Amino acid sequence: MWNVGTWYLGLPASSSHTLIGSIMGVGLANSLITPGHVFGEGVNWGKTQEVFTSLLVSPIVGFVCSALLLLLAKLLIKKQELYVPAAPDKAPPWWIRSLLVLTCTGVSFAHGSNDGQKGMGLIMLILIGILPGMYALNLDTPEKSFQSFITTSQAFTKILDQAAGNQTMSHEEAGRHLSDFLKTTGKFDDQTGVAIAAENHDILKRLDGKKSFGDVPKEDRPALRRDIYLVSESINKMAKQGHLTDPQAKEALLKFRGQLKGVTDFIPAWVKVAVAIALGLGTMIGWKRIVVTVGEKIGKSHLTYAQGLPPSS
Image 1 (cartoon, rainbow, N blue to C red):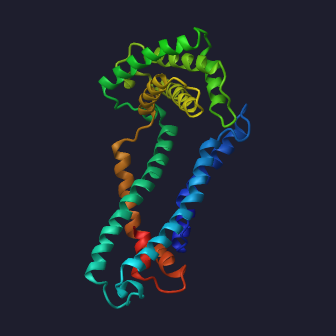
Image 2: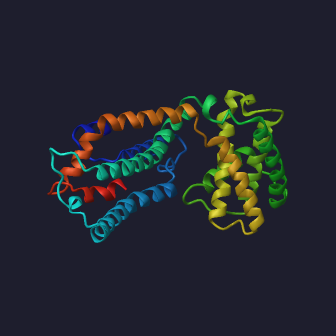
């Protein structure tokens, strides 16, 4: 409703901001109504800080770079047609039209590759939530990759067990420990490695005797996804905080994390196609209201070709 309303009124509102706010709101509400949860735990505040920093910095970078590019164009390109408002009853010169085709193609590609990720992420979030049996794991993982995953996981289980000093921890305790560790306030301690080893044992136990992720019972797939996520993100946080001091061990663990992420971070081809079509049709149908606002109503004068060059680049 917000997006349609701002489009109808020609307001250049960001759907990215809207989406981020709505997901945070759902996370906060869930932590409030779920028994045993502390208010605010439903949001990854570390990731939120990264996102808000990028949202704050990107307009400033765009503002400065656009201003510099316009000044550079004035310094190097002396064609006066670029610096006067376009005549409303005349088509642009052929060389400007050619330039617009090239730059606008670049904008379309950049916009699609950027906003496309947002749309695909939202669709996958919904699919995993309502159809976890189908989309919690990448069921299209080739058998060879699945066997490689098992072999690598078995090898790292031995390494993790040795690092943990052969200490043991129940699956429930390990899950709670890693969940606490992954919170913004979570701290690394000598039990973190033990918890990772315990979760990895549970992953192997769930996959014992299986030839593919499709062989895992549907009711077990959400729990397996959770285990894989906890191990993957715990390794990532340990690496970021500098707890993996051995360069070889760090490289190997991050490579293992890449395999773990491949199981849970995936997007079916039909989702990519659907988002691409939606972006294309939406832009074709609804571009004019926003473009007129940005191009004609924000500034006091009619937009010149030179002023249109930085945004389209």
